[in-house]
Amino acid sequence: MQGDHPVVLLDALDLLVELDVETCEGAATIGLELVDAVPSFDAVLVALGGGALATGLGHVTRASAPDVEVICVQPLGAPAMRYSWRERRVVTTDSNHHR
Image (cartoon, rainbow, N blue to C red; front, top):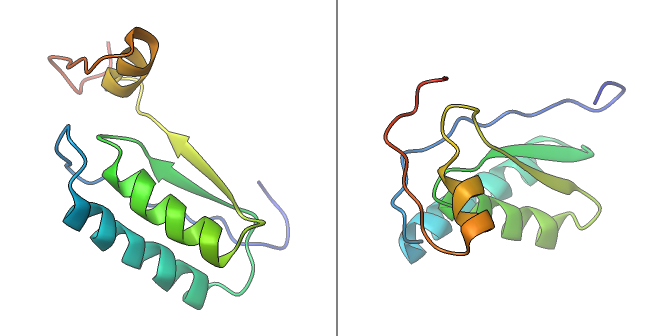
C-alpha cells in the first residue's frame, strides 16, 4: 500500500473473547480520530484479537469514509480467531508465541 496516502497501523488491544459494547464504543473513537486526523487514506489495518477493536473501529471508519477498506490482520502466533471462524465456535489457544 504505497503511494500518496499514508499507511496507518494500529496496535492490538487485549480484548475479552466476548464483544463488550463499551470496548467497541471506545474502539470506535479511534475510527473517528483517524478520519479527522488523516485527510485521505485508502485502507486501515486493524489487529484482530477478540473482535471488539475491529468492530468498533471498522464500523465508524466505514460509516465516515465508505471508500476506505478495513483490513483485519492476525498475528501468526495468535490464531484463535481464525480457528474460531473455521470451526464456527469460540476456540482459545494456549500461546501468543510464534511456533
